[in-house]
Length: 292
Image (cartoon, rainbow, N blue to C red; front, side, top):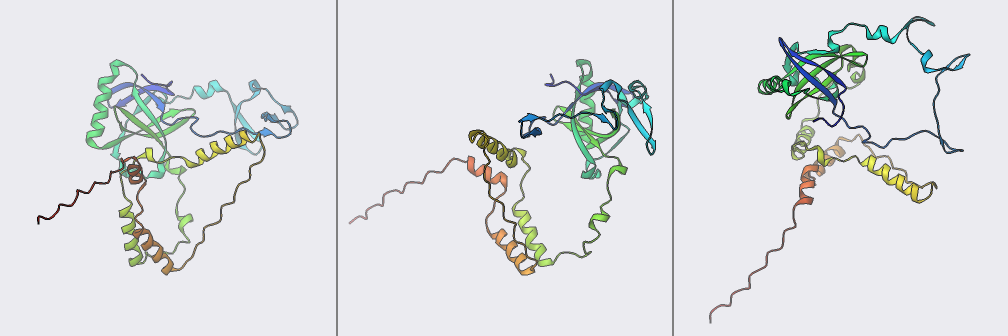
């Protein structure tokens, strides 16, 4: 049974096979420290009002969505009119194409959601599609209307269920050329490349998200506790000194070699080392006396 309410219910369709499914957010809300804006003199929370120039604050019932077709000119749309827009993808996710997961560039991925069968009757068909995707090592592509927008989505197996990820459309992706145009078109020095590759090999390990912690959130919570104990007084903090950088190739080679020789371990290996029980020193057996 799902732990939260679904944000979408509909049918996952593969050709003539339709499966009733539910979709849930895969990310936790409230996992990070949230702040409110406070009026310092009074200590009260700041609220926001929607206002119209020359009129002042307005009520929610008088607000409509509007599309600006000319400067200062809008066509107003009622909620009922927007809801009446007929899109099959509001209730049906049709898998229209299958691709290798590696074919989708990472920058196209947006938000993940869990997909589960909506009832017992849907489980058999759900299981078949899930396992077929796993066996073929493919992801299914389709489109889904959600919260006033039609998304391009990719769906793939995830444990006993499936994972749906919304994708950006091609028109939403910025071209990289303008950001990389000032980078000279030349390869790295072979000797430097060899040492850097060796360093990467040394620090390569399996991905384990449990070993990575959000240090900033921990530091924020510690700061908040210190502020509470100090009854709101200002806490002095040390400024971080900017890291010293050099453009010297000799310094770069020295830094790479020093990193390679340092015995630095990956986070996973460090975590494993801290959990490993301390080995007890073996007791030396007493030396045998020579026979006289």
